[in-house]
Length: 127
Image (cartoon, rainbow, N blue to C red; front, side, top):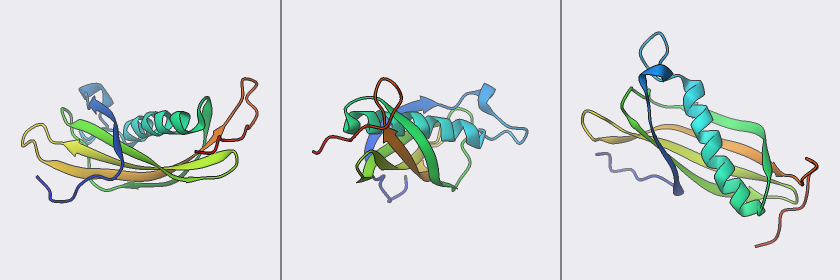
């Protein structure tokens, strides 16, 4: 097991399945990005106290491949908050099926906007 530890709160855990592989036998980067969007959306909605929408993937770094059977663990945190938008930092770690080793596989920064029921931006409540 690596000595590095994840940043943020464990927000999502899921298993990489055979249906999610590319032609090289690795899990599609788009599948990993999707899991990170789900996790960051949870954190953003909690902080905004309601509906949010993803407006940008500001950064995404693929560090290591994810394999079938790995448990993908996504950690997320609120990086910064503006009037209607916020940035959510993320790290995805794979718990390897064969060795139970854990290693960071991706990191990213996603921007969300808080929206009302009509889909218009709304202020994010102060903490």
